[in-house]
Length: 393
Image (cartoon, rainbow, N blue to C red; front, side, top):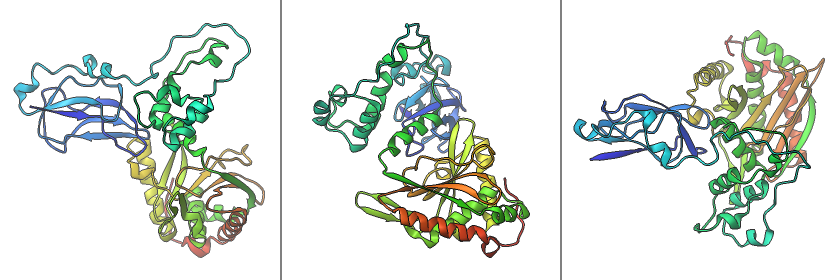
């Protein structure tokens, strides 16, 4: 008897996974809980563990293949004899050919002539309105110019993944009218970022600009040899703690009031933007946070982040102050948060910041109060930063 190994859902945002490598070979004995493969999710490379004792059996998904969650990638046989004869090398496996991910393979260069760039066709409103679809799928279809009526056949309720697949397969007349091009497959991280950005368009967001005195905060961080961003994250958390509405999140049933301030800090990773999450930032000293930050950065460098390392933040911080030319900037408000603070390069006395907020939760006066309180917290870091030295990155 053989048990099927399927592509696991290793995070809430994962729709597809890329098989990085097989740790075991066909015919190898494996024990329950033992690592048998590595899969790239939308943020990191994670291990796939065996759920059953036995022997790895083919056909196996090819290394490098991208497959949807739930798709078979291999098998576990009860006996070695059962695994023999069915074992195939990963590169010759048949599994990836059963259900290739739509529109992900590189396309041949196009050589169409030039002309005026037409806009993508928008779906007929009447036909789209009659289709049963989730609210998220309907918003996504509107943004991507996908006709819900054309993908509703055979589906009782159209979901977001079907809309995304249809968008990938849609004609690209607006590209064909221009110069020759080729399609390069996006990394899992960048695909996840694209999905999240589309989803965030449904959040009614407003922004408030301010200038804050951050020189004292920078000096305190330098004195303790801790990242300035880490100090700023704790200052934000203390401000959120004083104004708990900024730790809430909108839901159709009401506001979700969180009991802990978890700060997501945007980090420039090789494959795209990642927000590393520091937990309980308002209640923990800088030294502990610095140790956690080092561990998160090391896991990011090794591409071994777990979902809890980048999911569930209640407030977000994005700091581009290391780029002197960036005076100020704006950011998309991540789902599940009420605010994100964007910080530009330090100026002579003050630093420009932008606070983007969910208008369903807070109003302009609330944002002004937040920035006023944050200015006061940053102005006297000795009151909350402690004196014990810590090292951070």
